Length: 343
Image (cartoon, rainbow, N blue to C red):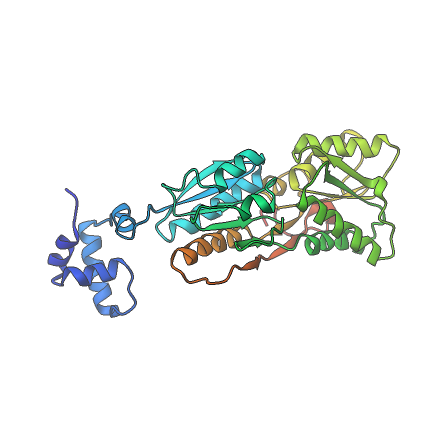
């Protein structure tokens, strides 16, 4: 039998309103009263009807999260952080996979799920500013990723140029002088352009040539793309002493090719990735990587949606999430890396 608020109130000897105030976490309830009601909730096994709670507010209790690549470890980890953050506010998350295709991103952004969601968190790849400028749907939209649309929507991203400069600066600080970049995208890709820009700026600032012959463009950003890009550089007769990859899967693919060619990481060629996904921490050589604060990105995205729903954010915000450089064996070597593989 389902336990009701009335049952809890009778057990605790208080009013139904008091129980409701405790369940909804209203701040004016005294600690003693909160504890009294909570004991009855625990004793009876009461569980709030979240669907009914949201419906009373005219909401569904669902936030949609639209990502370009669910198979990419970074987006999988990001999705987990959004789901965790949403659950803290009694929301569930509906995942959409756009494949990074403009028509799918248009479909999602223009509100084809508007009747079943309270807000949308979107990580676009191919959408243009005019696609979103004409958006008629009033469901709150929060953008993730590095493309700057200059539109009245909350936008959460890390500083890709600064993060790329930190990665390349780390390599230069270790004495590396010929740093390749793999993952420049054929066609438009703002994240790739920003990371190439950071690579170029840091080399130039150090008085080193930003050798465009060491930039390998790819069609995708997976393990095979990284391997192909690494082979392209080596087969062209170039032997850089370091590689900065667009992301971790590409870095891991590149390291596989280096192993096949008899080149040691990091003794012969140091490697840095981007995104700090879990597989990079458990390879034979652990991967140094730019580590965005994925938990913070997920939390900020959910909080931004809820702030819009509750009219607590009058002006669109550009939010910079934190990042750090996780230094591991692919640049420091095993002897110099004292942190365990899970660090």
